[in-house]
Image (cartoon, rainbow, N blue to C red; front, side, top):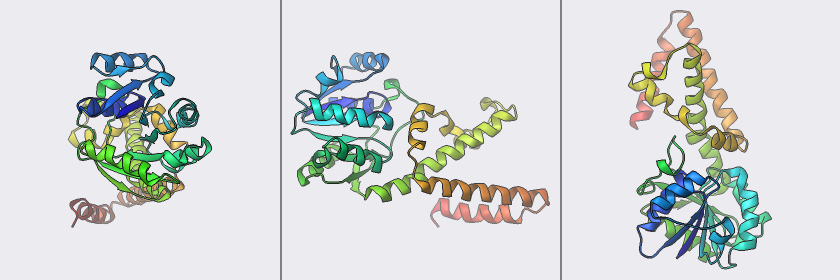
Length: 272
């Protein structure tokens, strides 16, 4: 299967590396970033002369680019890819993607994919052959045919991922809580620490773990947060309320509330 990959950062680059190891797939990549194109080529990935050239003759198109680029790329796919080509993406939000698919006339052959995998690092240099091995992948579709759904699901299963289907709105609300909330909270924590003059090299293991996400790509996350589900705002307010309560309790010399919260959170974390 000839797979056209537009975007060769962590997500697209890892997919290209994984596909290139399989004899049944022929990945051809393109990226705006010349460094990513060069690094992928050095790794043995076929690089097209342009996005249009990558799309020509594709059986499958995978968009591994920021969410804000999807509308223009969807139109490009509609113009340049064969009418038989199936389309997917690796965006973290699915309702906006499916809306762009409808606008471009691609809804019957577009299945949106969200692999729960990645890195706080960026670029092809952070890509890994096994990034998707065992990774959950949420799939959603609007009017996609049964054949398109089967092809995209098969793509992920053949890479060792664990695809499952979820309604797009439900997916986006869940991601607001389990992905976007941790990112914003970790970033706020790191920003507060930086304001006190504490260096990242002074952090202990707990501090390093809880601020790791603060190293994520600002452009990628700015793009996602611009389309964030309203559930994220509610979740952030819930965290802020807890922090205010803890601060008030500690200011009064009362550790009862923070300790009770530790007990409940610890039980949740252990699954008990």
